[in-house]
Image (cartoon, rainbow, N blue to C red; front, side):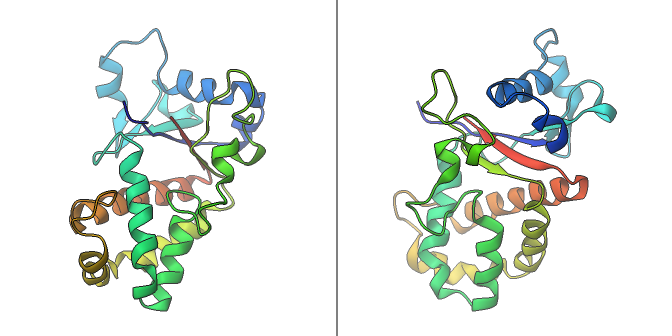
Length: 205
């Protein structure tokens, strides 16, 4: 079975107050209280976000990707960007780099601090019983990503030709340009909402 991605948006002040070894479980327990049934999912979903029952005092929410729940399509989008970025206008390339780095793409494939334990915000994955954190984007980094997305969004069609030339039909890449841009748009929604709230992002398996 493949790895899934569960993405949370969280108030960093409240998350930071929780011992680091308990933070992942706290996110899950808060968005999916064990005492509630399936009605909670239908009640809590709004704008892609799954909220706890008392939404107005909630300090975190889980994003429900309509495109995929698996992690591999996200990495395929990141790999596709790596394939085409040098074929893209420099201003668009700079904005897309800012938007994607640390989320689903890394400028240096050898430098993946989140996989080693969330950059110190979560216990290292080598610790007994700790999860391998897929991404951590602190609140101070999110507004820059949201601004970069606003610059990128109107230029997405410019990526079609490079994508067709370098990615279409290749294993380990999105199947179509539409799949590629659909997932980018969801990340745009995620960063926009997190920036609006001043919250950070955490991706767990």
